[in-house]
Image 1 (cartoon, helix red, strand yellow):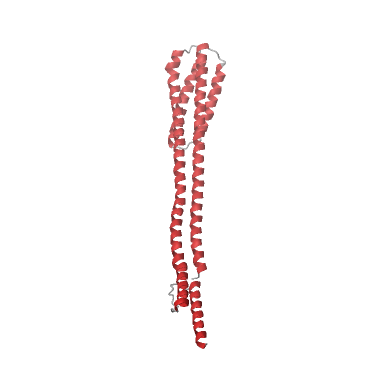
Image 2 (cartoon, rainbow, N blue to C red):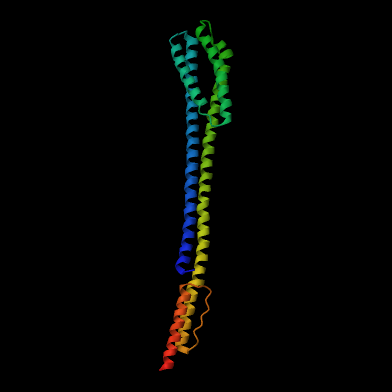
Amino acid sequence: MSIRFKILIGFLILASMLFISGAFSIFELTRQGRAVKLMIADSYQSIDYAKQMLDALDHQENSLLYHIGTKDSLVIGEFESASNLFDINLRNAGTNLTHEEERTTVDSITHFYKIYMKRAMFALQCEKYNFNAYLDSIQSSRIKTKNYVKKLMIINQEELYQSAAFHEASAQRALLPGLIVIITSLLFTFIFIYLVNHYFVSPILKITKAVNDFVKYHKAFDVPLETKDEIFSLKEAIGHLISYTKTIKKDE
């Protein structure tokens, strides 16, 4: 095997290792980045939907209490507007589920909100409805609805935290191939240096010493080599040259 081919194989192996590890790292980072981005976007949207529902519940409560206290029918429009806002965000939250617990939470919100709306609409239509009746009938369903909305927000806040932890773990996993290739490259470099020294540098030094011994001390030129490559051809050529030189001297 020629020296050129040996060196080429060594560099091809090293380049292949670098390419494979680099491609794997890029693939892993891209895949995990997309997954984390999707998780964060969904969780953030659900948190925003929950916040909008909480604001709508507060507006509904203010409008309802004002109506009970003043019997002003103008606030009914504000109550219905807040109700529409709540319904829109509840539907959006129902279509943006990323966790099984979110589904049951949204179902609970829907259940208790229907009860709340039924009692609230009765209060808006009843002229004799008072604050005590509000506390006895409406307040409990509103509080339960609000608590489940808060639970939905907490679930998604935890999802955001887990997404951040997942992203950190993903980055560490993506770095692992890089660490492996660094360690492997160092090991391969030491092996490559040893092979270069053993098969290239050492034979050249032996040939050089043998030539110097022949010139200075007239020792026989004998250099054992393990491989049949260009260095072996060089040794053979030098041996032929020495033999030719000896023949010329004998003829003289």
